[in-house]
Image 1 (cartoon, one colour):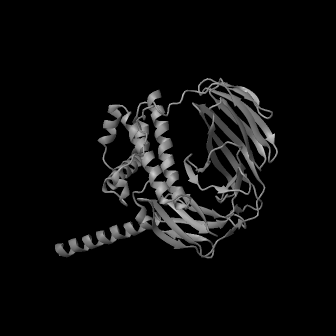
Image 2 (cartoon, rainbow, N blue to C red):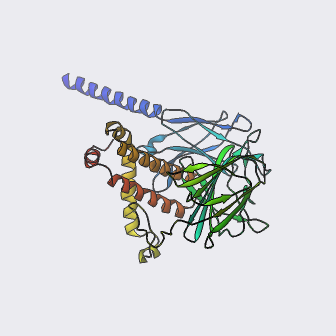
Image 3 (tube, rainbow, N blue to C red):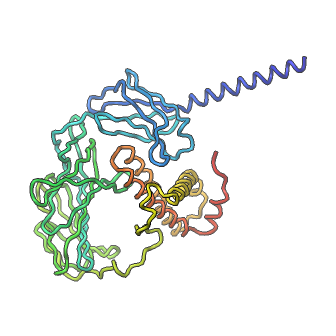
Length: 410
């Protein structure tokens, strides 16, 4: 009798624990809805993917929306991942959002158009830095797509168009992601010399675009004559070093920033096609290219026979170590932040660490969106990991010891 009772109790406990596991799994499912932001209607029969960063973005689950645009994903394959994202590819454009198991997710997609919407630049920030016999120019444009109804602007012939003045070397362009991570973009040549564009799909809202190039400064003079075809609400020009003379029919003097050693100028309410013009002259800062030593955390590319191999064993091992460090650190960061002393030095380390972690997360987003190649992804990921390791090395020994002795979260 006792044996029979014990077996019954054991069976009931197994049933109870199994039911609890099923209930817990159901509660942790990722549910949400896909909405067309142009028509404000649910999107039916839309493939939805659950993605996590594992040696690149890995698909761990899929679902298809019902007639009401609802979906439900099993998050079991994403357990332990520091980042979980839901992606929907609509009309060849990637739309994604970060999600948390147990919380509803909403993915907004938009109709696309090849007709240029009324784009405008809410802010343009230009930095011209003269060093040695070269001047480096970086231009940051925050472009707003305010189309009504909202539509994503895509055009294989180019979406964002710009013009660079004579003397500008081969330019580079990048999209600044949500976490301030610059991701390189291909540049298309225009019909006239100095005309360029990129074909990044401009979602409704704002997109930040970085254009950079170098020019000759051997004569101690440089004339900035760049242009975008969109209206600009506010343009800032920062010239370094601050001792350079600036002559401009457009920009007005706004002061000197001794911290960054820049002379700051500003212009407002510029019509589309306005020439961003300024003439710089004076003594540049000495060139540091030949004398500077690499700082801790810098990544340098040097010739190595291993690079001729497809995926060198050493690099793979390094990636595994760096990835494990990143996952561990991302999970432990909130508790570490709460326990550490609030000293100014540690606050500075915290800010740098948060920036790098956010950049890593944004890099994964952009890989999911197909905005970067695998080669670019791994290159920039290694650089970010190296910088993160360098910052950790600068942390106080007691802090590192407390972090190292913690148990891994289950």
